Length: 198
Ligand code: TYD
Image (spheres, rainbow, N blue to C red):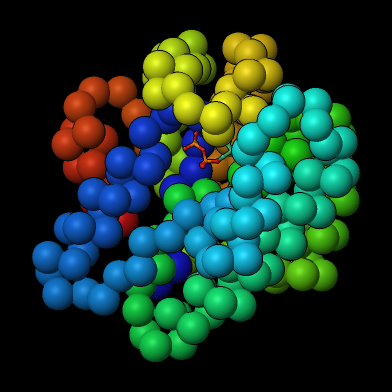
């Protein structure tokens, strides 16, 4: 199975991806836990161009191309080989992040994003969990973490609100694949909701 976790900055999806990977491994499955942007050596190099520096460093179009290039490498080097070995792949972000961040939140680039996806990626997860939290809560967690990877957090609360709405719309439009998970409560409570949905 190919599973992705999605949501706004600071929603807790990285914790949940790790908890699900640990739980499935404890049941005896072979699980690869990976992330985007990144997940392969080449894509991790592209990641630095994307998450560091000024908020307006790239146009939305250039960003969509860079994320798609990173995803293509991640797919070739990590995801496809693991699925071919029969392993479960859990990724912290995938194509839905580009649909929402570049396609919906930064100008109307959804058509470009969809065409790039069809041309260069063409794969969807079997299941996607969107961790839904209040944007103000997410932003305070992200900012508290500090560090240099704050390009998207630096775009502010209005941007995070647009993203949260974009992820909810995406879940509503893809009910068979995408599940919206209430992100409130302890990590264990959220993990239990995810296991029930899975
Ligand atoms: P990530 O490492 O998941 O950050 P966080 O753990 O803070 O959620 O992703 C880095 C940033 O890149 C994040 O702000 C979301 C953004 N992003 C996009 O804009 N488009 C994409 O396609 C992806 C994969 C990430």
